[in-house]
Length: 430
Image 1 (cartoon, helix red, strand yellow):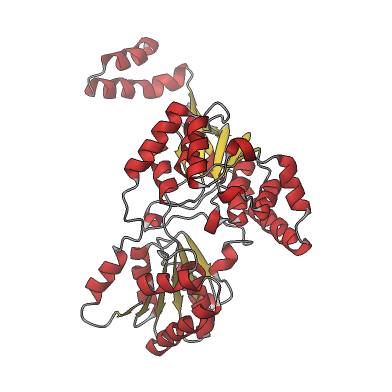
Image 2 (image 1 turned 180 degrees about the vertical axis):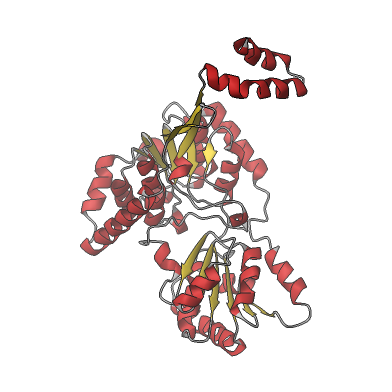
C-alpha cells in the first residue's frame, strides 16, 4: 500500500498518480461484448442457452429458464427468522427512504398567462441485473427492485446467473420481498442484451440497472440509448477521513469492508496523525489473515490501498473531491463531521461521525448502495426512484398568452433561418 504525506516534496505527483489510477479491467472486452449482443439480437433464446451452457455450466432447457414466484416465496418462508427479519427491516427502510424521493408534478400559470408544467410517469418495464457467483448479494436485489416498485414500474424483470445451476435462496427471498415479476437464470452481457432487445421468451424492458463484472458493465454501455441505464459501475472504493481518537482496528475494518469486494477495490485513509496512520496499517495487516476473504483483501490493499497524512483534516476534503469516491467516511466528532461535510462536493454517499460505518449503508440504512465509482461522482448520483421515471413537460397558451410571447419566437426563428417555425407562430398571431 502507498504511504503519502501532503507536506513532502513529490506529493502532488504521487497523488495525481493515485487519482488517475485505472483500476477497471485492463482487458478490452468491448469487441467480445459487441459480438455477444449481436448474436443475442440475431439468435435470441438459442444464443442465451448456448452462452449459459458455456459460461455458467448448466442447461437452461433441462434445469429451467426461470425461477417462479412460488419458489421465491418458499425460499423466504425457509429463512432463519433473524435473517428474514433483517431483510424485512432493510426493505422497510429502503422503501421509506425512496418514497421520499418521488417527484411532484407541476402545473401553473406564469406572468404571461401561459400554462406550464411537467408530469412524471414510471417506465413500463425495468430490468435488474443481480450478479451470481462471488457477488451474490440479496442487498442489491432490494436496492434495485424497491426503487422501481416505489416509482410505479409495472413490470420488473430480474436477471441473475446461477453458476452450475445453483440458485441462491437468500437472493430468491429478497426478490420475493421486493416483489419482482420475472426472474430469468441468465447472466453476463447476454442477459443485458436480452433485456435491451428481447427474445421469444423475454420481452424487452425500458431501463436496465444493477452491478456486474466488466462484461456486464460494457454491455450496459453498449445498449445505452436502446434502453436507459443507471450507470457504468467499476470496482468498489472507500475513503476514510479519521483522527487519532478512533481505534485503529475499527478504521482498519472500515477500509477492509470495501477491499474484500474485489482485488481491484480501493481503500484510502486520510489522517492528520502519522502515527495513527501507521497503527491503522498495522491493524489492517493483523486483521486480514483472520477473515475468510483474506486473499481478496490482501491483493486489494497491496495494490490499491493508501494512507495519506495531511496537516489538518480540512486539508483532506479537496483531495477527497478529486478522488470523488463511491463512499466517504468522516470518522470524527459529529460537529466536525458536519463542518467537513459542508465542504464536500463530490462523493457517492457520505457517512458522518464515529458510529456510521459505510457497511451499515450497504444493508439497512435506507439510501441506495448502488453508487458511482471511478470518479464518476463528479457528474452522477446513486440509484434512485428517478432512474425509473421520466418527465413529460407540457404547455398550454390562450390567445393573450401567445400574443405576449409569440413575437419573440418569430424573431428567434427568423434569426435561425427557420421560416416555417416563424410562420407556424405568425399565422396564429394574425
